[in-house]
Amino acid sequence: MENNKEAKQTRKSGKTVYVGNMSYSRDENGVKDLFSQYGQIRFIELMTDSETGNSKGYAFVKMVDAQSAMKAIKELNGKLIDGRTIKVSEAIESEQSKTSRKPRNPKASRELAPDNVKKEKSITPPATKKGKPVKNKKGLDALKNYLNS
Image 1 (cartoon, rainbow, N blue to C red):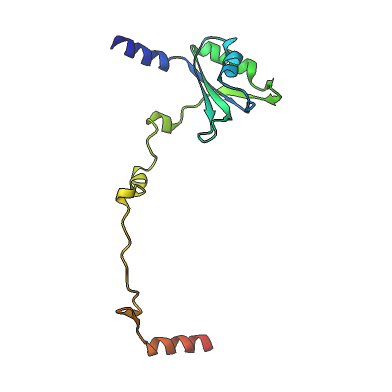
Image 2: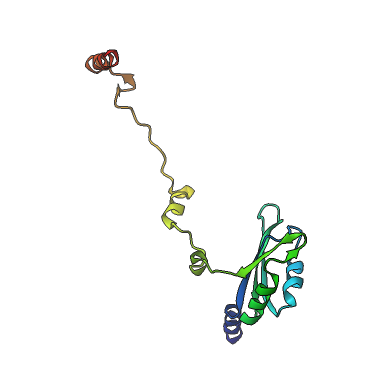
């Protein structure tokens, strides 16, 4: 129990850095090599395409302390790496991540669930009676008069 509490506290401490415009060929080890010279890294989250597994060209790097993170930001932001000018800045925690990535509109996600989808009933249009069209001479004549005027 004590170790679990320490792990959570360790994960919370430090500062997260956003790294963008990276080469798509740069993998997690490449990001580690780039940032390890500025301080100890807690973890790296390289964003990848869920279908192909290829890099999306950006990552989040959690540094152990804020000083290391700020030093990395200062030294790496705007630097040419792998033929690309990378963008390095302090990561901003989104509201979505603060709420454990819950859907923004839970009602909408429930409505899309197959069990909750209502089946449409067959409805007879108002202009028909028992599936046969109703002749409405007054309405039809009024429409003809309107169109002719």
